[in-house]
Length: 263
Ligand SMILES: NC(=O)c1ccc[n+]([C@@H]2O[C@H](COP(=O)([O-])OP(=O)(O)OC[C@H]3O[C@@H](n4cnc5c(N)ncnc54)[C@H](OP(=O)(O)O)[C@@H]3O)[C@@H](O)[C@H]2O)c1
Image: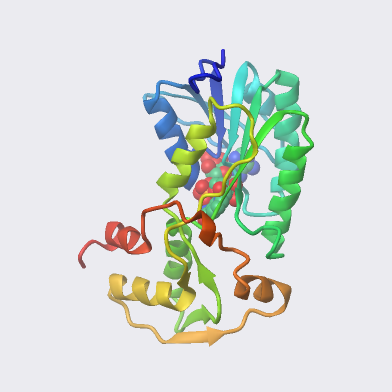
């Protein structure tokens, strides 16, 4: 059983999205701590990594009752990157309630209430489902992972010109630091909104893109563009940033170094 005094969890922890960028780091940390981890994926996976892999799909609901059975803590790191997340969280909450889960840790994004992107509105709706779940809950919001910017820049570098939205800044964070914060919440009492986790530096999009292109050894013309509407206004106002929560240490340049070496 959970022992709140020393932050130990002896029951099973279900990690959804256990194969994802964040989830696999959370799993790695929990397994290293000796926690019994059940990992959810839509595809069957082999064992041998200390994880009890189960197959389930949050959107269809298949396998979720089995995945939550006998679980003490659920860490939800799954995402469809779409609105479907909302029904997925609803299913997870219902099955978790039936299974008597003690604590649901939900990972969210800094500024989802300030930047009205469709995905962010869905995340906000997910948070509401978690808050109203009747379960013990903790929500941890983080800024963009370095990996996400790398993916966006990889895609942009394939275009003839490299789009660079004007006035937009990011505060990217090392996903391993977010994972450490998430794993730290497992074994703690449900805390509501946990302190946000943001990267060490607020940087302009252009500056980050130029650093990427330098590290990748590529030349591209940056095409300034203006993101229209409320999303653009929210981003230009820094709605996606949390400078007062710059607790991450890993810089974007370090992520570039890991990715491209000294090319
Ligand atoms: N990426 C960022 O910059 C960032 C920043 C702040 C917060 N977050 C939040 O952190 C969480 C993790 O993000 P991430 O970037 O690590 O995601 P990711 O790499 O895209 O991984 C998504 C995970 O969700 C699982 N998944 C997708 N559809 C599913 C479904 N229908 N049923 C069950 N599982 C499903 C996938 O597992 P299988 O394919 O194995 O089924 C995969 O493990 C999300 O809640 C995201 O909003 C992300």
